[in-house]
Length: 249
Image 1: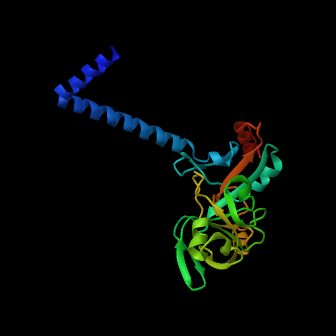
Image 2: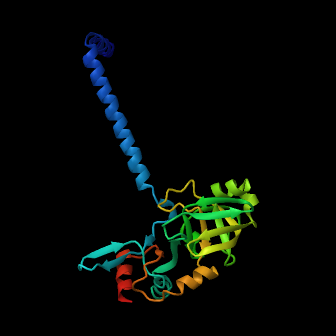
Image 3: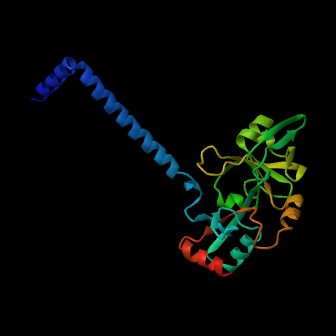
């Protein structure tokens, strides 16, 4: 019986060729569209899953001139150290800002070669404790071992030095919005396997003298939303309750 059904189906396909072609094409397009939509949704939902479930970015509410409130993803410089100290549910934090303040490209120089480089960030030494990028060469325990340390992304290390291992200990000059400074490459990280809203090319420390001096000019909680602040909460912490505690400080 099954063979007869297949035989009839095949005959109908041959008899009504145009109608069959339209149906088959429509079915193929529908299946392909559903598959692409599924893969897209799966990729979007996979972002930032490698960094841990209890990682949150602090937001701020700004009141505009017309009285309307606007929520932004940045926060002021001194908030993170204070709330880590005062709120036990916050076990760690790191701050991050663009070395070019997201306005232009930086320039990185090694010997007589210079390249424009994007996605350079200034961050706290706790960055790799919250963001789980693989350090594939150099100091894995303390990549920001001194104030003039820089960690490079794998592709840039290979572009400048041939491979990741050769980059360690080399001196590079980086021109940021604060000017040109020399840095020692202390680690190389790989972000190719991590789906994240961050895709850093290089990272330098907020302990760098020029940046520490710059951030020291903004000691207040209001009016200097210069950094993105990321918080790691304890496994049992309720983010809504933690947010309420932050507002009470």
